[in-house]
Image 1 (cartoon, rainbow, N blue to C red):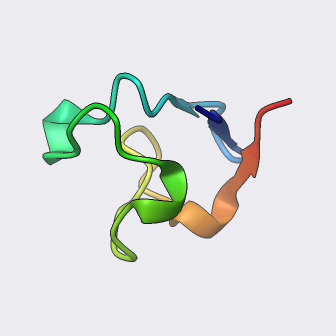
Image 2: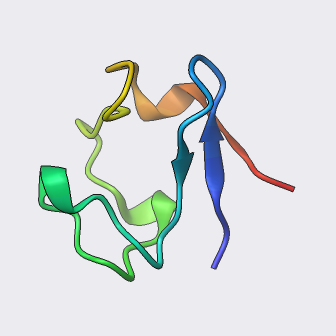
Amino acid sequence: MKKYICDICGYIYDPEMGDVDNNIKPGMKFEDLPCNWICPICNFEKENFSLLL
């Protein structure tokens, strides 16, 4: 599964881990995150994330 990095703070969203603090279960692809999901570190929108190569 593809990982994405926040361009603002460097947080890495790993779909295998999810974001359990924000009710995102492991296995959820970045593309399937709710449109109102924000970075759990800096609170910026998911538009500020880039594919981690």
